[in-house]
Length: 394
Image: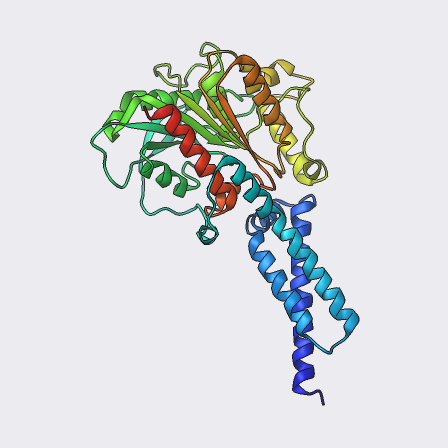
């Protein structure tokens, strides 16, 4: 009959094996092409919460070391496996810590456990800003918790996602922006009707017109407006800020509004044949084919069939002197976008003399802002705060 010490050693080794296997699976999720959307979502969470994986791996290594005098070879294998997982799990945090140091951003380990961005401490005012082709388009207005005696600058955000998602996907960011001294507007739009890639751009310009006409009722200053967006929303924000007004008019009777600043989060800017290739993980994933089909549906054909549409829909093609200042936030480990896209956009902005800032966040996945306390989100808040202070707050 095994002794208590033998049972304890076997249990420790079994647990060490489980931590090693779990860590290896998490690393594989992050590095390998995702077979499904659900696998990509798990990969996003694994990368964003890699510090917790590091703690688990350290615990597993400690268990294997403590299982003496057990099987020496097995112990060595488990210690090594957990140590490798530990090292891999620390890479994203170490890289972001270095980036934060270079940018002068303070990071907090305690904030890393602050949870997700999907909930907020209050509700917005929701209203319909236009009805286009029978579709009611809504927006949310988020005001500061403490009212201001003076009109506040306005931040209009255009969400990313899909056609079944509405505005205010990550409301914790809205309340943060509001409490930093802004009136925040989250605008919905028609999600790329077939062959009508410019329709949502027109909707965003319609929403901007509503803001110009009505935001004073909510304490906002219609003469100080920043336009921002994530993923597809960032694509729309850039086009709404940069594309010639005569090419893409608002989808409703609305004044022309030129935003004072624009922020694009993990956003594609080049859709022509000269675009950088998709990341390796996407090219070897079934999701790549799905996205290509969605893109062709939106554009009305392939890049070879309708090249003029891909050119017109590429924000980089609209760069010219006199554009509003831009902040580009690039995810360095983005499944959907090679960082070279935004590097080229930043170079084009430099050539045109447009004030801009490009921040590349290493080992950060698309939609990293889901993790409110993540190091990438902390850096982003530092950069957005400084950018908006410079360009919206006199």
